[in-house]
Image (cartoon, each protein chain N blue to C red):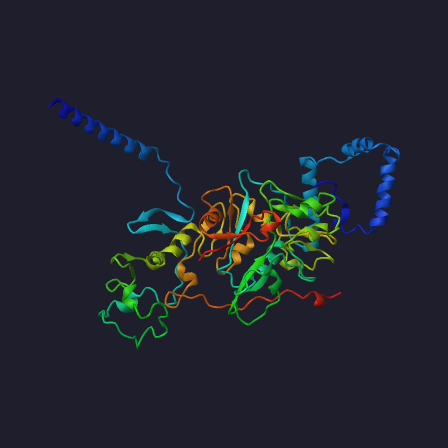
Length: 308
Length: 186
């Protein structure tokens, strides 16, 4: 989490242009290399000025955020930066033969991960598909609303971040504000994201969402157990996405993701791909499994399967 | 004669080595860790899992409260006075109450081999016919799991989601659909 911009601070009311002017002036004062200086000189300059935060600096950042959020949401908010667990690569299974399209996962995710209620942001989209046409995304319906699900002749496919092994969203980020962690979770640093939305264009799964406005998050509904790279409140103008509930799963013992726990039919499975005894390995080894848009070579770690 | 003896010795040696090997393998085999959620120890009829209490209709259990003074009637019939709410929609032509409920001990269920099990082990009863589901359930793949992915996992009984007398999963009202782009407030 480099360069903790003051974007989160409520007091900060400058426009970006003004801020850039200020930054330029400040840099000027810091003996900037000459205008026509060769690239290597600039490189050396940036190497000196952009460095990784030390552990103490990180702790300070987290403390600052905790204070800010606690004041805003009138409760003791925790912001953790729990590191990946060694020997763990997260994988997810979704049983298409069980899912009934009830959307409990969508709202379970919103509650757990502090998404904006108004304007609405959903990290999970449930697609209604036609049994006769199979997984035909051209024919998918997102806004179905019958009195009861499942509807005859249909099946349901929830789509969220597929946690790709080669994520196209990471490749296109011009400022490296998004990356894949060692445990396979692709994360965003909301304080580093410049809001260019290249990643949203690059993602073939529509899994990234933009904060057009200030998040409508009622303090009473705010989940105070947060992670820096996960469900902490997001500022305006940044991109967010599913993180496999990083604030839950990176602990030992670590809870299942919110969507797994809320699913009434048990269609959602989660575990460590490197553990041969895990549920997700059982699924991959014993069931008919497919990954979405395999032809794009994004190599998702989100496995759709049929248990029957 | 001598050859005969040699052969006998050889056979003995071979069996001794085999025995020794078998014992060695048994001893060396790593004690496989019990999956989380499984109770330590197993019953004679299968592994035991820690599950929440079965979802009884309030006031209905223990069954012996009412049944202790009643003479069991083993004749297959339609119940007219009690349990009229139970409409069997689960291979109804092929079975009735006493195929799963024990006739002698009303607080127990009965496996096809005559063994009695508690209501908190009913997965064994279901598993007699639904072996593939039972296998998946034990692995944590059929049915809902909550708790810790790398620690204590909470299993549910089959009957927490499936009414044993009418097991198909009932349709639910879906949560509201997302807002259409054209309806987003500016």
